[in-house]
Length: 107
Image 1 (cartoon, rainbow, N blue to C red):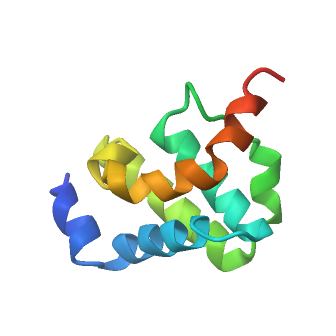
Image 2: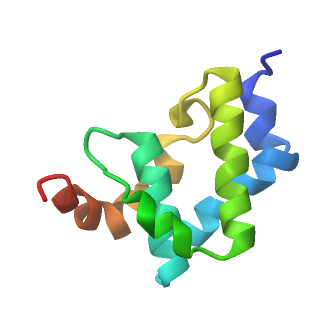
């Protein structure tokens, strides 16, 4: 049963919390931030930003769980990330990490 995506993010319930945690992490400058950014950018625009799935094996268990939760929610409800996250929320991630993962697409 599909839910409206707006409450998912704005009410910060369960999966909204997972998405919020990943976004906040992706705004940072750590190894976990890099991996969270790679995950979110690939979901945001997989043509421009590629994720190396091997990298996801090196995240902390709570971050991995958040990634699974968000992925499962998107899959089960047939949503794209841009139905839950605005461009303005993704802009800091794109500004900090976009060039790193854009270059990976040509490797």
